[in-house]
Length: 171
Image (cartoon, rainbow, N blue to C red; front, side):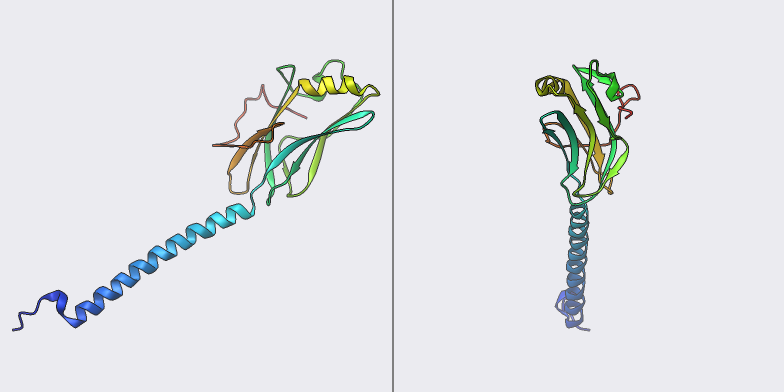
């Protein structure tokens, strides 16, 4: 009988080497999958930005998706003079305007929507109205990562887009 220690036998050294290589390969595989998922999320990452445009007789409020993937807009909250409104016509003394839907829609990458164009010959009057409007959007990526943004264009990561019915903008 041979008193050679078990770890010194050639077949045991080969087996332990194979086990070590297998563990290293598994770790590399898991890390590679993690990197692939992160890359997939980043390749479809939306970024909504709110903008305004002034003309001689109108102000336009718009939203553009400057991200790399579609933005699923879950809701909008619009305030006028610190009061939640549900439709653009809830703004008192609002001059003539053209509107489109903003909440609960999908905005593809590199496209814009114009929720409201306010028209009036007095631009200073329009600017006063614009300063009193606050807009908050909550949107998600296709991977259900969600953000909130407003006119400051500083998106904040949120757990989910949740809003009460009383605060939801309906237009």
